[in-house]
Length: 545
Ligand code: G16
Image (tube, rainbow, N blue to C red):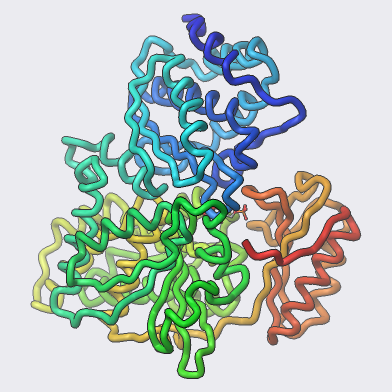
């Protein structure tokens, strides 16, 4: 079947800008919003093709640039089980987005449809959402033209978070089956999470109020709805909720700001009291960072590594108490950004794997465990219960009251945790459950291990594509000679560790460094940044967003 003529007609309305090269990166396409119109249209077409290829299963499309500045936007595809797009299609997405003219696009499309053996007569179904960026509405209109061009049945999920969109995809595709993931609506999501949370904390004291920095993004209205569902069970105070103030999104607030600057968002000065817990979401509410002030009002950050340590230990304890330790093995997945102290702490207790940056890599690695806990240091992560483990939890007959209680908790965690992707709000409830069960304050949680001082630096270079890595991004293989220079430098620092990798979401190279003191970590990061600069030209900068 040839490509329907409507595709060319619509494609003419969305010309590709000249001299721009697009790439489906760590989290889909992401760049300054003003050049993205053609990409959105083409992603609409691609989503419809993906659905046709998978026999009309619903594919998700999320329009967001997450932690990036407000002027950026982006788009990513979600596969039927709510996971990231199969990596084998990423290259096709890149090729299609870079076809210059409508004719080029139709040619590439035709080649792809033939090669991938896509039956165009099959139905296509998609569900799509966007974050609060001002550019979102017009980009969604371009996306919808892509759906129309192939006659896809399209459901608009409106302004929502990335994790809710992932939830909806899985809920739609499992509706009415034995694997039903929940009602396929936002309301269904809130009901599922809040019911599980209430069950898990039923016998615990109501916690002290938690401050949520909503990054002035979509997390604000969504968290407000969660507050309604949680009622008195969880006092939440929402801050940074200005979703219509120009320039406010992710600006000096949000999870990425906290992680990169290792500081309290200035807007929370005087709001967060010593001893009180606070947390930050990012622009699409898929990342979570916790923090607190000690009695001297000193800021302490509890990042994705600390969340992994807290959660993994809790899950292991429940599995053991339930008497399931021989059947259910728990493992952890991290990236090179994981603090060395966290890797040490976790590997003394559990199997730990290191994979390249990007949720898709962590997610797939975590699927190999019975219960896989994965968190990036930046606060992106979740916990996966394998299908076999879910069955074990369903069928297991406990023999003591203690086993029975632990089993019930594991079953409720399986409901509480959004297992499609990292979800800041679901993760926040998970953290609160563990803190309530362990009767931990932020300080006690923080004391699980002491972070090695570390520093993240961004370097703007002429072409970040010349940076190639191996060994889960811990070693550079290009530009030639640079890794050797980094190694020589690292050897001079006590407890030194550093690596360099190109970002998949921003036009920068990232430099990470760790050492035994803060001053040494800073110095190492800036000196490695300097090496990158010398090799490739650019500006080392810690510019927090
Ligand atoms: C995305 C990915 C994360 C990744 C982050 C930064 O997060 O989903 O897995 O850690 O980008 O990636 P990079 O260092 O390649 O720029 P988000 O929250 O921005 O969607």
